[in-house]
Length: 458
Figure (cartoon, helix red, strand yellow):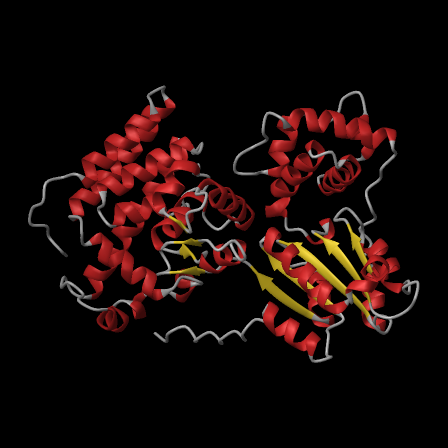
């Protein structure tokens, strides 16, 4: 059976440094679409805008448009020449018309925060725009029976749900939107698309600090084609199943000018506790710089003394610990997941998927190799990979399946079968009233904590 065709390598993405170098060289792009982390995209967008417009002209020729504006409003602003001519930049901050559905919960939380910061009009405009995406009008928000918080939670589908303070925001901002007759901008993209097709007026540039965008939208593709798209996010390193955020550059930039640095231990603890949330990382580092006083180096113990864990474990972290037969690691992930609000039912389903996949790969390897243990990836490629139907393989990486096979050999075949059966029993017990957290932890101890003994490997 032929192997699936190799994928074409992606072209290197344009970086912020590339864009700034082109601007300094007198070759700016008419459109800059920055997407990724909302905090970093806004910071990068402001850097580009300031490079394009001299400081003396920014009060008139740098126009910032809030994210609730529609494509038509943006097009109208772009088509209007600056009061005194010259370069003009229109900076759009987190445009709602480009946001991905997966990021709507984050957009709601930001609007709620703006309301409490006293930015009432901007927050209410964002709420109205978001409501329109979910099928509600301003009349719905300001009416006698506005959508309840539970209805918002259901449609937003965020991981954490609404916060207690969000209920007051919905009530007050909805009433404010009704009193001010704030209306959602039209979703019609034709005016902006026509302007992009025709070309912006000479010297006019559109900069979008977009955060997470819906890459399937035709407008996203047209904006990227009309100029350049720059991904801006914290990168990751490590193997595919053990990714770590690379936060050193952000920490150094945040501490620039303070004379302070973060040592390796503190960097590792920040990555573990905060993760890849750039806004939260910058805020925590600023607090740490004050916390350590005159000391020049921020250490791991400073982080542990001041920073509260906000990063969630990746969905596959529990499965990885099980595959590694790491009982302490698995129990730690379980307890953190439960503290973060994970459902025991969901965790049981995830564990069942992990065990089932190990069983499948174990048996596939045993049959393909005639009962022998497959000793290397090259041997697995030669004997096992050709037996996998391409329709089953799809987007799976062969090396990932090889790793599942290796993980399965840390268990006896009977251990895996018994573990799968006991997960079904745990699921039934939870549905009849038993404590799910205790059942899952008991399962981990029973399966991962078995005494070492000679295990069959085929």
